[in-house]
Length: 117
Image (tube, rainbow, N blue to C red; front, side, top):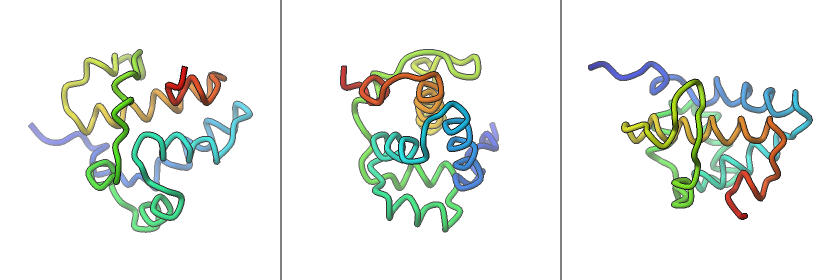
């Protein structure tokens, strides 16, 4: 079975959409970056390098310095798919990120989004 096309899509092409979704709801690019950092371990410099390199989603998550073990606490539906039921590891990471950005846009606090309850 061929890979889903999102795997070969550059993270840099989707990143502005995450930021726009957040800003449209009164949130900030800094909050989007904080979510990405929490999930992947990329610092601001490393994230910028990944964006400049046009790294695809598969490599973006494969090269992530410190995938957060608390990401397993992320539950719910995004794009009609329950994130905790996604079997393929890379697709699950992508869905986790999508879910966190959705939560940001829906007005959840950063403590709730980053599972610090």
